[in-house]
Image 1: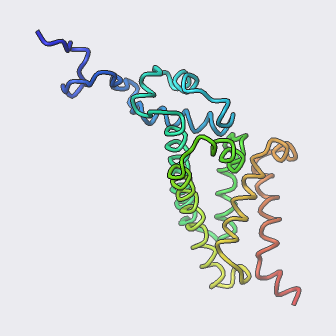
Image 2: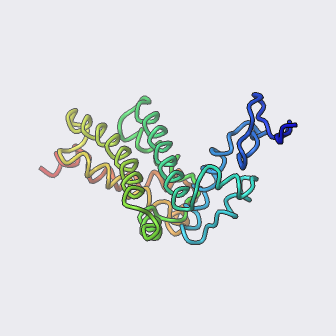
Length: 220
């Protein structure tokens, strides 16, 4: 008699390899559940404070299931952060392709980003995790981050060419904009105003005053 029981098989009828987690009954693949939980916990608590046990408990799977998909904490960290950055890029791209002026689209992006609960600043998180990451893992994360900046830079370039914003380095504008959003995620910043929308409005006013082409013309 085979040593595999019916419970050791996936729903498709294929045998499940030893240690492989059972199919997720909730419909979301276990790997995706782990990535989602890990990205939230890392951004809320930092790298060192988060354990694989904690991540497993957060998404309702066993620690063995986490290890099946990610062989170590640095591997999971790299995968979860790059996945988060790719999703951020996709969401940003959708908003940038929506209607309205660049200022209006950047404001919508700010409102969405600031509404998400994030306590750890990205650069602080990277410095904390860098001791455990390989050069390849660091590069993978930085490449995903750069893709987001390059996307923003394309739209800043279009705005420069159209005279919507003053002449300048589009990539620098992209970095300044994302840095401003990180500051807005600080608890101190979010406590200054009655709502996220009000905070986003104020931040965009400050940012736009620095790149607005009309303000440049007024000074001239």
